[in-house]
Length: 77
Image 1 (cartoon, rainbow, N blue to C red):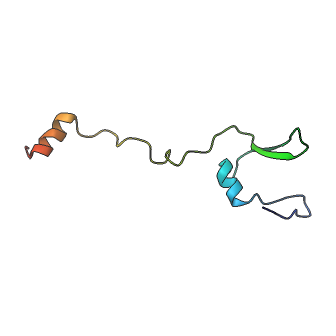
Image 2 (cartoon, rainbow, N blue to C red; image 1 turned 45 degrees about the horizontal axis):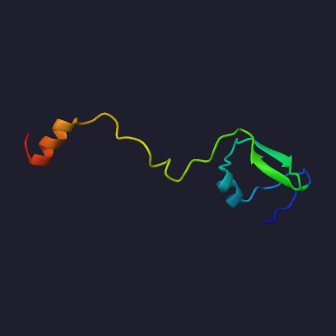
């Protein structure tokens, strides 16, 4: 992926890279030089991108207890 450097030295991080690293507005990033001389972009705030299942994880909160659910299942009131 290629991007253009502005006169101020700014670049736009391509969306696939932002998505991969979980970079959102306000995220901190760091540039590090690798042993082979290349420069690597990493997240500096050490937050891991949320897994695709993290958004689905949770619970329904307080609600019916097991006895109430079983009564509804049986058609009891």
